[in-house]
Amino acid sequence: TGLTLAQYSEMQGSIRFLLGIISATGLFLLVAYARITPRKIIWKEYISSYAIAIIIAWPLILYCMTTAPELLKVNILSSRIATYSDFPLALAGGVFLGFLMFALKKERESLPQNFAPILLSCLFLFIFSEGIRDSDIALKAQPNTESAVQTFHAATYLGRNTPNGTWSLKDHNYITADTWMKVFFPGKGADYSNPLSRGFFARYESKPNREHCTLHMISEPEKPLSQECFDNLAIGPIIVHTQEDAGQFERNTNFTKFYENNEISGYWRKQKR
Image (cartoon, one colour):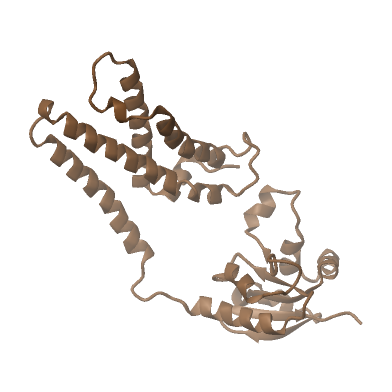
């Protein structure tokens, strides 16, 4: 299922989303007005209908893919598609602001003297206020990098000690910066997909037909299905979050711990003799 309008707006940022809607609507009205009015418009020759159509259609298609993926047969996480809308929404806003400033300049004789400066000043203050708020939330005075460092430390150990042809398994739900672990595995396994990853739980729930080995091998390593997955995929080391998933491996005698800290625990699956 796709995102709701409220969820989509929250991911984009309310100001960016609102500006994108206003800009797309404004560009459409500009093109429509330029085509149907008999009046001679100074800025009419600078409008390209095809370019404006692309600028409007780009975020519109991404919005449809995010909110109604089943209609377009999209098999990608909706929250990921939503992040792709940042640039086209910003582009539409920038183009519209450019046209607005150009039109106000050309039509300044028919407008009040201070109308254009006041309008643009209020608009920019409106935009910058959201950016300042987002920066205050996202930027920390003292970034916490300890979790990522521990992840890279464990990945470095695995990259140096994992035999060729042995696949690794990690968790993507709780481990910080786990996606970067694959750069520590040059030449390990079959391709750049090593280590395998237990993805977000929602993906397994929304797509019942997708593979579930990566889910079961970490969540229920003692089950026969998990053991079959381990054998078929030649899984050796497993990297999990210490607080969230270490317990099921501690209780399982088929795994040996080789690494542990407050963030990361590493277990090596014993090979059957």
